[in-house]
Image 1 (cartoon, one colour):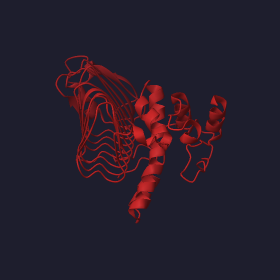
Image 2 (cartoon, rainbow, N blue to C red):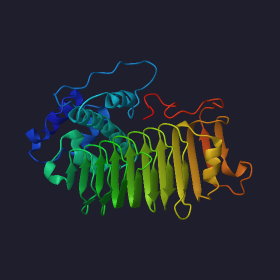
Image 3 (tube, rainbow, N blue to C red):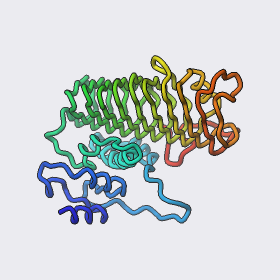
Image 4 (tube, helix red, strand yellow):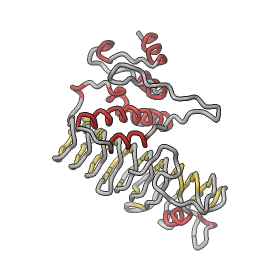
Length: 333
């Protein structure tokens, strides 16, 4: 059985979960392998079209054509067509979840074991809304909820709950314990995440809202971050695939901070964060308005103490900042 499962994964043809295990879940390693290979199957049972190969370099495992999904969602169509687009995009977002989980083991282990690349075990869901969420809900201890549209009302997930939102977040999600939040779309200006404990967040689009953490937070944003993040203790890790033009500051007292920006982040934004007096703050920045190399906080003009270091990989002083302008396939909502 295990050999046939691996063969199915490698061939890109994943059989329905119930045909193999009834209501059991797939082995976690098989789910992770399948997600990493991108071997998900459409509802019609056909594997995705192969992408053109390039000799420039290796494929980016966390990349997906977000602009195409945005264009399809903006095009005229009914509720059923929109729901289908969100479900297909969700499969791409899960590949990012699997990739991040390999980098940050155990990562989003609850999400991967629960969602099974879109093949669900319905009895295990605490709450499942098959459209937009328009009334507040509360998720019980260590339970999961899945919103198959936009989140327009508040969610409270108690004691290590898991929240999946296929659309955008435009309300408040509160989690504690060892919680996981995965959002297929963006966190809008009215979207808010309040976290206590050890929390992992993944956003498939832009982050334009607010995150407040009093514990440890790992947040991966596939688009740009223009919103606000209040960090807790003992540590915060932020991964931004687009540009950083938002703000980061301690919720109470500065602790450990690591920020990885693949797009543009200005020197002034780095300085503003360092001035909050974090115990240790380190940055990796794809593009900035200063020369490439390693810079130390204590050497910046006006700084009184060594608070961390930051490395810049490429300089572009004249670059006009635009949402998603630094990363291919990251578009403005």
